[in-house]
Each structure stands twice: as C-alpha cells, then as structure tokens.
Image 1 (cartoon, rainbow, N blue to C red):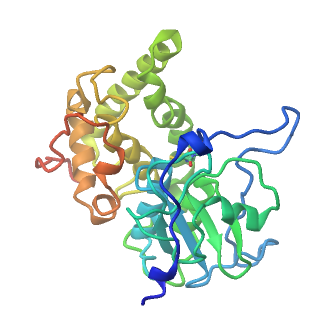
Image 2 (spheres, rainbow, N blue to C red; image 1 turned 90 degrees about the vertical axis):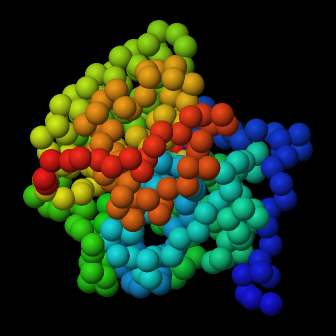
Length: 305
Ligand SMILES: N[C@@H](CCC(=O)N[C@@H](CS)C(=O)NCC(=O)O)C(=O)O
C-alpha cells in the first residue's frame, strides 16, 4: 500500500451536521481574520528560509487566489522545489477539506485544512483559506496571505531553480503594484460584486466594464500588461478573466461576454496557451452548471511583445 493511500479523507460535505462555513468570534477582537503573513527570506527574523522541499502549498483548483500562486510557481520552475496539493471544491462548517476528488493531504495526512491552522495556533478562530503555505521544518503555517505567497514563490527560490520567466522583476514592481491598486478592486474583487443586484452591484458593474474597456485599449498594442514578458500583473488579472464567463457572468448578467473586448479576450486566450496557465486551470472546478464555456482554444492574434 502506498504511503498516500494510508492517509484518510474527510467525510462528505454535510451542512446538516456541520452547518455552513463561517467564522465566529468577538466583535472587538483586533486580530486580522487572515492572520498568517510569514515571508520567505534568506536571513529574515522568521527563519522561513528558501530551501528545496521545505514548503508545501495547499491550494484550491476553484480558487483564483490559489491559481495566482500555482501559476507563479510553475513559471518560477518550482515544480520540484515547492510541492502542492488541492482541497476539495466544496466545504461545510468544517472549512476546506481533503476528499476523494483531489486526494488526501500528502504532507500531514490532515483531513481538514483547519488542522494545519490549529497546529500553528491553538484554538485558531480566523479564516481558513487557500492558498495556505505550510512549512515542513517547523510544522506550521507560514502564510495564508496570497499576495505575499505569490511574490515569495516568484522571487525567493531563484538560486534553486531556473525560472521560465521572472514574473516580479524589480524594474517593473512599481507598475505592477500600481495596476494592482486599480485592477484589484475593479476586476479581481469587482467581478463577483458586478453580478449582484442593487446599486452596489451596478456600481461594481460600471467599474468592471470600464476597466475592461481600458484594458482592451492597452492590450491592442502590447502583448502583456507590463514590459515585454508575462509578469505578476498578467497572472493577477488572468485568474479572474478565466473565471469570468463561467462564474460571475455565467448567465451573461454583466455583459455578453469577454469577447466584447477583442484585444482583452485574445490576450486571455494567448496566455491560456502557456502551460503554466493552462495546466493550472480546471474549468470544471469553477464553472457554474449550465454556463456556456467560450472557446479558449480559438487562435489569438497578438501584437509582438
Ligand atoms: N479572501 C481572501 C483571499 C483568499 C480567499 O478568499 N480564498 C478563498 C477561496 S478562493 C477562501 O479560502 N476563503 C475562505 C474565506 O475567506 O471564507 C483575501 O481577500 O485575503
């Protein structure tokens, strides 16, 4: 029997017994809900040094924030340096769990991701989220802050692996973060909000479509958002684009589809041809039942980088 097959799986999702997932705690608790923000640094105070085989990424196929990190990991050439596994796509009150679909937790044999948090902080009562970066050496969670994890994965392991592309180059960091300050609220968080009824939904929808129009114009003459190669800016945008027409816009409640913005749509398809993007995408994990899936394989004419 293989080692993995000895690891247990969580019982099926059962909201009758466990309720819906939510976080309960005192209103005056000042601690952040996402409270693990450790960083990988060679000589930092945390001691989370970059070593091959030391870290494990708990991710979710459905989750755009996880996919940012799995794309960054692939582009950084870290397949053999930072391991990854996936929680189930659905949860009950116990939070994210390891089930049959994607297999057991290969590192700790936990059945619930909660166990990783409780091993790090007794009685943990914040959010249990993916992505979560786990440290084998200290048997604790390093971080569940997707931004820090993505940047560290893209920058801290360069001495251990040859990157396919440097996704967070120093000379472009300011521009990447400037874009993020705009696209984060308007697109990454805005897409979900834009599908909702009411004035807040209408505001989010206007901001989202405005951002799409501006991006379409920008991408008419340049292949990537920043510089001449794929960067973290493209990764951050793309994980939302790939979910848009089968998630928040599945019923075309926001607009007729990404194809309304031909350059943006071609840009998204062009990135889909890159293995790091394509192989980290599982449409089934995030497609609303009955949604019409656009043709991601249609050839994309793009300006040279
Ligand atoms: N919402 C997080 C990003 C990560 C996240 O939302 N991950 C989702 C899955 S896509 C999750 O695990 N959420 C747990 C929760 O917040 O309920 C943040 O804004 O910092």
